[in-house]
Image (cartoon, rainbow, N blue to C red):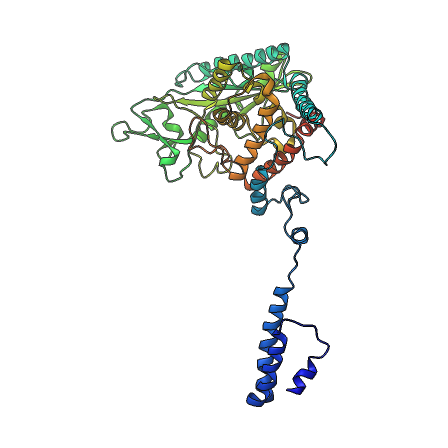
Length: 470
């Protein structure tokens, strides 16, 4: 026992635990022998170290935070490439959104300084007015298209429509078509930056007793927002009873086959150089293209892209267009895309007319930012329109003076939808308008918009600085 006490001389007091362990080990030599005592000593030493580590844990939570995970103000993914954003980033964004500015009234956290209440309010108002002024300045200088430019573009589109109408009626007089018409944002006063796009709608006539439509969610493919058009009554009306049987694949009307029929006519049979020389245009088909598109150069520095879109209008009013699924065109080649554009635009305009709101202005600013910023090109007009419609259900103040607040809310809402990987259609919530974005595209869009939340004016500057390529 004297040896045990002698060995403890000079050691720091450790609440008696060390003494008890040494006493147990010295007596173990007598009972277990040297070998057994050694094994017991190793196990006991491990327990003692665990105890020492526990009672000597750091007491400063600040130090732990510095070496551990960073807070939302400096998320771990901020220094990484925007192309490599993982699930940790998404959860960080979700937490961060709770602390980000929700309106243009919000200001960054500033160091304490002797500002009175009046000065602080003045600073906030100045920042709000700054964003508001920048948005309206951007709207006037970059978003709005001169009336004359729009008129010239519409005239060029009308000339192309007239030529196609005459050619199709002459070449295929038995093709069951309704009257073709021009559509798109160029005709809704929602086109931005430059008048460069129009849609030529080509309505097909289907026999009601020979064709029926099936929503995509009711099929094995389970794709809401897309439809199958099935051939019916083949036992009574065999193949070739309908003009469009030639475009049938596996018992369904194939939009791909319909487009191929028109592609052979429009791109292969029409002498566009000759027509262009008469109209004083340069006309050529765009290759490759997911749809049939014509490029019309109607002035030296101005081009118009006309999408040729076969259209089906079903008995219940559902509009289906021959535009393939972006990510799975081959697997879903028989699917027709449901178009909500007309109804979306009508609802947006109706809401603005009710309260004199700025929804259309907010949409046009957002469209211009996405059009001029390559990192945001994948956000289309339908997605932005629906994000605003959904926001309108929660936010009532859409006055012109609230444009800055609503624009910030729109950015924040888009980040939230991207984090969730889902943007429901305002007119049909089962439809996910983000279903054709890849995971990498979702991450890139989320990163860009998240960064823009802290500097929305920088987003406008970036858009202005980017050279525009249609």
